[in-house]
Image (cartoon, rainbow, N blue to C red; front, side):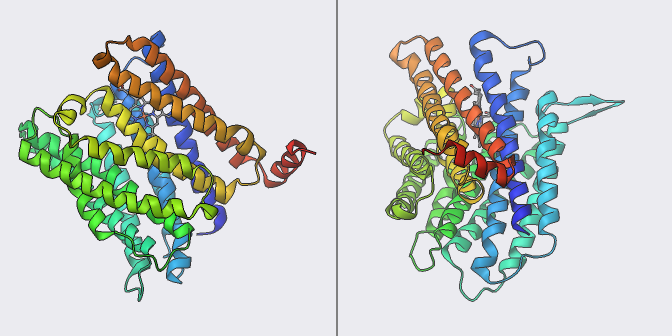
Amino acid sequence: MSSRQTRWFLVTAVAALVLAAWTGVLMRFGMVYGFPGWAQNFGAMRHAHSHLMYFGWVTLALMALIWAELPQLTGRQLPRGAAMQMTLTAVMALLSFPAFWINGYGLTTVGAARLPLGSIAATLNGLTWFVFIALYVRATRRLAVRPPAVQLWDWALALLALASTGAVGLIWMVATAAREPLFQQIFLHLFLDLFAVGWFTLGLLGVLWARLNVQQLRLPIFSLALLLTPTFLLGVSPGLLPASLFWAAAIANAGAALLLSVHGVQLWRRCSRRPTLTWLALGGLASVIVMAFLLLLPDVWQRFASGQMRVFYLHVFLLVWVSTALVGQIQDQFASDSPWIRRWVNPLWVGGVVVMVIGLLGLGLAPWLGMPMLWWLHVSAWGSLAAATAATLLLVALLSPAPARATLAAAMSPQ
Ligand code: HEM
């Protein structure tokens, strides 16, 4: 895949980030001022937002960055079909947005039929991921030496495949009309949470280590993948999960946090080669690690696992850590000469993301502190506006032709 093609897939991923982020802004301001008539189905909107973020933003960006780094690590050309797979992944991810926007995972009337458009979109996306896994296995088969980045991607894709079995379990429950709520939750969170915690974490660490060109360092990889696996159980409702399973998951989660901190510290120590925004991303990772240990305190998980604190946790993990690191990587590779980036994108992104998650934390704690929630809803809404604006400016910078960027850079640099 050429650098030009990689750039276009990353532009598509950033376009997905922009669309999903503005959907998030609509939801955040809707919670304060009410929703417009054309946006009344909050559940469907939330699904459209989260699935486009997962499929179109993070998954597409990670795959593009993995294909971009792989030839250097393996000394081999990419398999034929990689560009076609990426095109299919991008198209399916973008189509998931209207599919979920209409009615989420519910049935939609199309002509004479009632179709589960969201489930169809998720299945088609899943099929393109399996094509990616097959091509990746072909590209890395029987390597004499597997660098740390390749090992991380091996396990990231193993956990992506394992997460997909959760979707199979959900379909099996629908087909057999099984109604066991614990199994329904276990399959649901195996799919959603392991997808994020397994594929995103290990895939992103692989990209970061590949960019730093680290070949020799001993890093915890297999043990990290093993400990991350059962952590999806922490997504299950506290009322349903037996105490023994909670403790197994919480202890594995703390162990994984410890190993993640080894990666975090080693990445931090390579300060001189640290790409833009990595400090904010590593701050997000550090917060995720601290929260893993807080879950070991009595009753913390039972009290805070659902509701607003879950939304807060998800956005620290997905926005502050994963998305900020990806935005930094994309800027460094494809838009480092843009004046918008230094002047506007980075300050707006950092400010917006930090204010938004502070608002979400306030929302989560407000009932316990006896504070009004409306104030925190305002804080998170205005923070989200800044973050979405930053993402939009990044897209504009990526779409501007290089000569225009250079002229602007010269015009805006201090004399
Ligand atoms: C500008 C950035 C973002 C904004 C404004 C935003 C906004 C929102 C809002 C308003 C919700 C619904 C919260 C609720 O139900 O109370 C939500 C949920 C969610 N968001 Fe975001 N978000 C952003 C970034 C992200 C990113 C980067 C990801 C993933 C990569 C993500 C994944 C999710 C997920 C998984 C949910 C929960 C969905 C569910 O429970 O069905 N968000 N977000």
